[in-house]
Image (cartoon, rainbow, N blue to C red; front, side):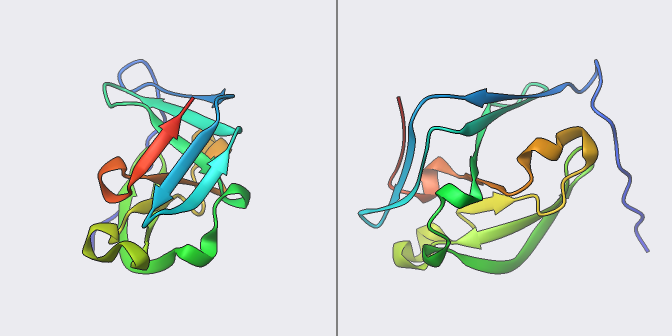
Length: 124
């Protein structure tokens, strides 16, 4: 049995979360899937910034929860969502930490989208 270890962000693996006031629109299959001015920018170590959108600003009727999941020792168990209207490209297009660890609790009830699995993520 594999034991999952939880790690706390620190100098060797920093994570910061800041509110992004810009308007963010996610489009897929010609439709708006998400629109917000309350996204969170998660900056983790050397990785590119990831925008997390409040679930209340996502049209969840366009998403389908998947069986696929992953684990991040800094954020927790990750659930994936597909956008069926996009077809194969939309499989596992979005993800969410349903019960994130305390150090990243701000991303609770938020989703992030892979830019290459939607038509566009417009920021500005």
